[in-house]
Length: 335
Image: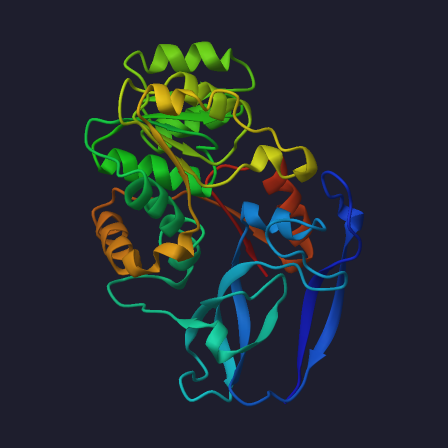
């Protein structure tokens, strides 16, 4: 049996921020399945900052080829399978990409555990690799947050940033979130429970951080890079502060001219540590992470707000919305 697949592909590369005309949409036909493959009807796609780095030649995430479907992680339901471990009706997570149907080797897919009231979409939200698990690994496995810590989060109104705020509060930390615009700052305080929200677009960032953390920052979770990393370094606690480098979305549009930290000597002065991380390098702790997040979800302490865009034809629009920071919470596309 053949199936029609509608996909969004890369038409051309561009220096700087992509534009709508850099992407195309087409219908294709998926025929007979090879051995050990599954055909998945895509249900929900996660819009993540790393996608940006696949659209530029020479990026540190492998550049996607021209004409290829835009990469994205998501959840979906198996329609047909030639793999022993997967059957029609099973829900899976994996690199489904910007399309309505994905044909993938079974080894690229993870069958979802939907017990304990877990829903498929939770795996591109609080339990998602690039959302909740990334937040947990950076905040807990890398930065080792403790009750009473003062935590600064950049890009705090995005999916990962929102999860960091929620997890830090659940762990008993005092949380300062940085975001762009008054609406996002209200979201941080009113929806997520952040103690302080700083509007980096309309405030003296250095002065606001210093005022919000008079005793210094114990943990900085960085999604943005650039100016706020230097501000955080200048305001570290006197000893044993930890910085977790998750990403640097402010730098992704010009990777040939990345702004590095000018204040890095504060790490030595304050006996602090700065460490980057890749979430998959901490897979041994995923069971622990999922158990904690799921328990907090059941207690109502983790509720990740969503911004959902409907229709695969609007995937590129959603992607540009992500790059422009035009959303709050977890940005998703439902094909």
